Image 1 (cartoon, helix red, strand yellow):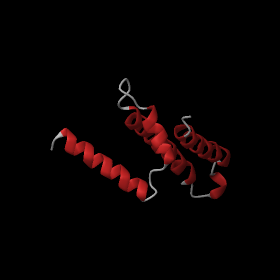
Image 2: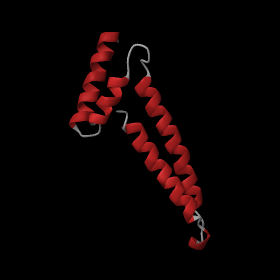
Image 3: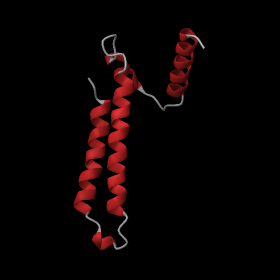
Length: 95
């Protein structure tokens, strides 16, 4: 498959995801920051966020897996949940 074909396929995929509401104007904002000096900006940003989110979710799972609810460290669970929420806000508010 040629570069032009891949580019067209990517544009169609993005358009389809936008039509479905999966990608919104925040994705467009991220794409606007990407340029020739940083062509992998969006991919790197998403990869970093997903890695961070995966680690936080694993920690949450560990904390919440206590058999006795009284043994759950709820302040730590709240901190991790807020960290995840803050991360998602930080990655989506680029302007």
